[in-house]
Image 1 (cartoon, rainbow, N blue to C red):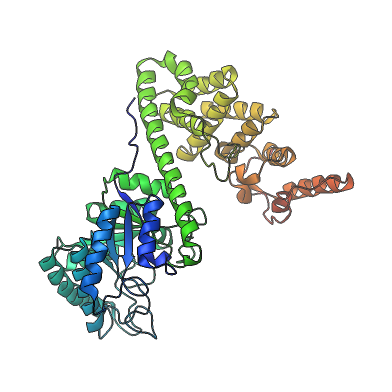
Image 2 (cartoon, rainbow, N blue to C red):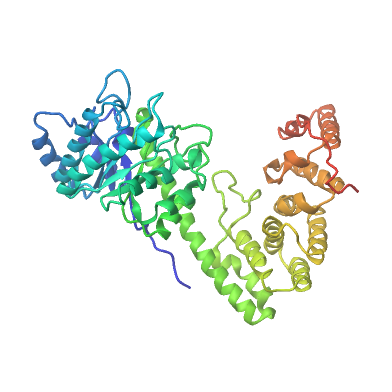
Length: 501
């Protein structure tokens, strides 16, 4: 079996705008110590004044130190009040007067050339009120063309960063500008993976794939879809392993730097934790790649010899491992399962592509009845995957799935019950049995995060049953699980589309 690469093809860096309480020499030393291979250097206070009279000498010293520490560098130009002490990021390229901004970007290009930087990253700015989009495009085209000319003379790449709320907000907008300028070779893109969950229609993967070979710079952070706020990894909605996997798929070989501009108060600790989070995410990427390789080989073997299914199914744990899919939030893998659960479930979904409904139904039943707990979880996860990807499952498969689900719900194994309450149950289990599955999870102390479509299927009867359960616990002097509150607060009523026993 082919093994995954031990290290990503790109360099992990950290932005100096997340270290504003440290002198630049100390920042570089710390990043090198923490295992970073690059630095995203934001020009301006406090690290490198682009208008300093002794700038040339500073750059010479800085380049030598970067080379000694083997740190790659990209130039960032997002200092908030560098050009205007009263308004951040003003003047912008889309403002009526932008000569100061253009001059600053020329200086950034000169600095990049002196430091042998990978690129100069910049943004459009916010379109002033009352300014038409066409005027904005004209201003941006004119000014960027000026900077491009200077960058070309210096041999420096420019990387335009789409920013939420700015005139160039998405990758599509950046590509539009590039098209208007005649697709110049020297103009590439910066993509911040946090921005992707806020404004990109295709999310992280879609934005990175759209940028494709034009990607020259990447910023790494977490973010929630409701706000443009850079967050430490794990505090938002960004699928970091997916981002790293997509960059690897694109064979991106530039810098991907952590971007946390409001966290200097905990810079050293956060830099260490960020590196640990990225290393963990990369391990997930490697594990996913191993799982995919196993799946392809397993499908090919079973296609050639259907009788090999039980042996292949049983071997999943030895081949792909048994680590939790979400170790931070589900360390015991009860809620979301482990890697072998996923691999077995995905295998069953792929087998649906060439097994008849009858063969698939028979396989589900035989694998569950003859399997150990891990293999049974795999069957249940497979049913969930089938329900997600095949909304109109054939009747024999649904019947087999209901039989397997009912058997799992009669057990006292938390992993089996949690897996049985997933997407297949949400789509096909009758309301009476579904309610009892939810209450059984509460009774067993398993989070209701295991339940798919809880808010859609919860009804008044479930709320009544939960209230009775809570009252019994209180009368016995026993604690009431917090998740009971999720059911008591539900205002949903049964829908006619749900099967009622």
